[in-house]
Amino acid sequence: METQIQQFGMVMGNITEILGPAQTASMLSKSLFLINVGANDIFDYEDTYSNLSKQEFMSTLQFTFHDQLKNLYGLGARRFAIAGVAPIGCCPSQRSSDSGLCKEELNDFAKMLYTKTKDLLQGLSSELKEFKYSLGDAYEMTMNIIEDPRAFGFKEVKTACCGKGSFNGKAPCMDIQSPNLCYNRREYLFWDFFHPTAYASELAAVTLYSAGTRFVTPMNFSQLAVVDL
Image (cartoon, rainbow, N blue to C red):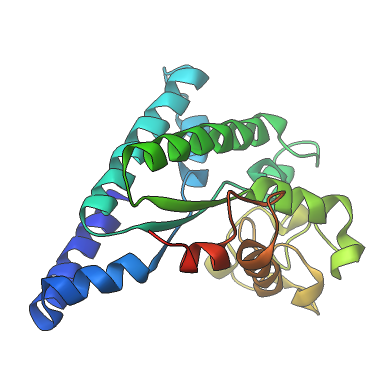
């Protein structure tokens, strides 16, 4: 995320040269900054056998994210639309490497990170006068689908539409020749070994934009877009 923030700072400088400081600040204050981070960090922690304990790892993520959000605020961001980490232990790549069940240790990380992110955002909203946020519970949203897929039009929530091996989860779809490919991707929760299908992403977007506080807190993304600073 550090690289993206640096790139944003460069783009903001270019915009400021064109529009001027006042108009740029006004535009940024009305913009939604959509952020979804954490999943790759958890995978990296699991894969590298870090010497950090779980709590130390979570604290490191929290402190880093805190500084990154403050940096964005300093650059003019005011409305932070943040999606938590989904149950990554249930994606095809994880099911394919074990018993076919979800890896609950990874899911526990996702839930823990959501709780810490929620606390972090509450603190920043008290610390920074114009800091407004909306936090989407991607874990709860996704488990809601996994537990009752047909209610949302899905027929398959374990196996990827495109891939190879068990659950089509052994390799990214683009990295293999002659992958297995499903007939109707709209019926699948996962496109490949990790990423959701377009339909699943559409459902997530609608939920984040319009749902109540079960899935998005303290307000949904549509409310965040118009809340007074």
